[in-house]
Image (cartoon, rainbow, N blue to C red; front, top):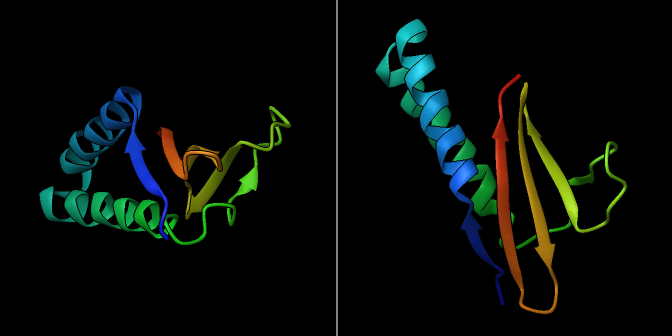
Length: 92
């Protein structure tokens, strides 16, 4: 059974801000492609939530990151509720 994925308000804000900033530089289509790529990577965690690495800054097993190029998807895994909470989308 897949894990449920939730996006925090901060993650949504990061994604929106990244789209707007990239749209200015690279155009709206490139920004949409990048956002969709990040969301696809995020949703892929449903089947393999522990594939990201533990964040070296925090050393907490439940707080992980998945890198996509220079972008980072920071998330926590709750095994008991089988859920993933995306905390932040950080851009390179």
